Image (cartoon, rainbow, N blue to C red; front, side, top):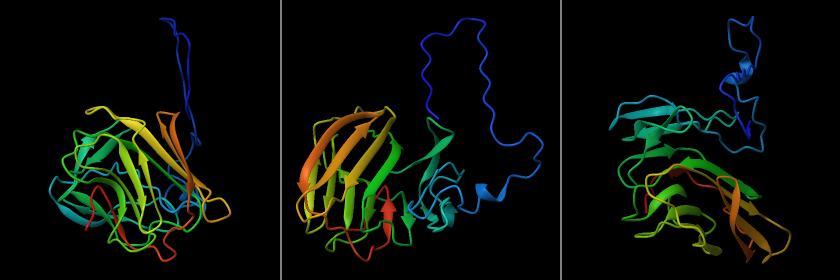
Amino acid sequence: VWVQVDLLASNTAMVAMWGHTNWSVAPACTTNGAVWNSNYEAVWHLNETVTNGGSQAGVHRDFTAHDRHGNQEGNGTVDAPIAQGQHLDGTNNYIGIPASIVSTGNLTIATWLQIDGSDGWDAVLNHDGYIAGDVHYQFPPADLSVDYHVSAAWHADLSAYTFSTGQWAHVVTVYDRSAGSTNGTLALYVDGDLKQTVTNLSTTLNPSPTPGRIGSWDG
């Protein structure tokens, strides 16, 4: 829930409540994926506490029924705008997604991210490998604008917006897979504002999605 309040007086009190005050045990929907329907490929909150530099299979829970739980691969817990997040260095520290991560239809990727620089291909979410249809969503070397590439299909340079280092941003990319071969669109939103739209993109995404990584790419 997003709330905008124009003015708060010194004696203002705000109370937010949800759920049921008499429940002593959380309902099943909080862990069985029922909150997110099958159209959600994965939902990772990434607020798990892990030991920096460690490795733990399946620790980063996918809250959909697809159970695409992420593997810790050297990443560590950091403070984030909402609870905790994970530090990923773009190479050795990443979260491995062992199961397929995208559909062949429309695709929206939403994330909170903070970048401290770009000295290589700093991945947000990438397929492993580079076969036709694989999604590569990343920051190019020495560039603070994001790049979105679908192998052997199309490339969208989202350079109209430059990210600031050391600042958290809520970033959403929306790929609209319209009918036809050259009329798809990709929109970039940052903190709720539309920053750029790229049009006339082919509609090809990988029909047999491969495993992937958050924060890195296996090349």
